[in-house]
Length: 169
Image (tube, rainbow, N blue to C red; front, side, top):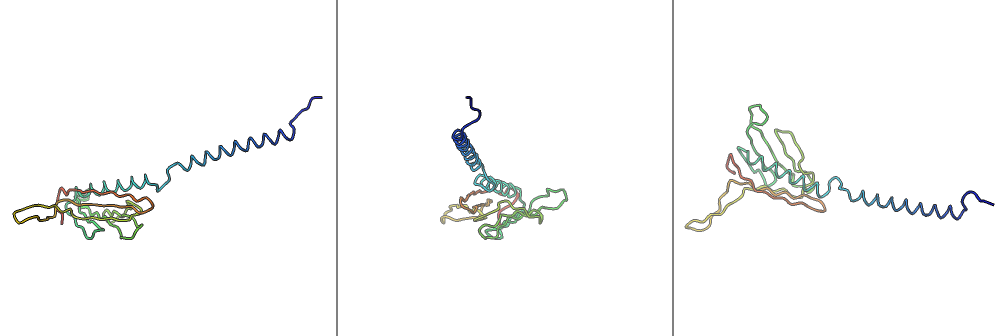
């Protein structure tokens, strides 16, 4: 007598093997998706902070006036960029509250450059010189910018930029 079909034991064993295979495939998919970069990750934070520093540096180099109103705000005046024959007003500011954004205001229009800051410091670089009476410090034609992001893995970038069209206050 020939039998057709599977026995109950064969069916249970094959279902167990298929279940193990599906679990293994599902686990590998979960592990692969966790390794993908997420929005707001360290690489994205480093990139946005670096872009912000480059933009600040470009604006400082082109500025005709530069005023550091506090260590947390930099006011710049640039030659006309929009074609309206008026100078451009650019303000970089941070509220001083950990987690608040670094804001760039271009002619009154605000744009967040870095979403979560831990510190933003702007200062006029000081150079030391020596004369017959000893060492003296004089403001230079450079502005120093330091940006530190907040979060679990903070990013710290710093730059010193020369004013090409004016002197530091």
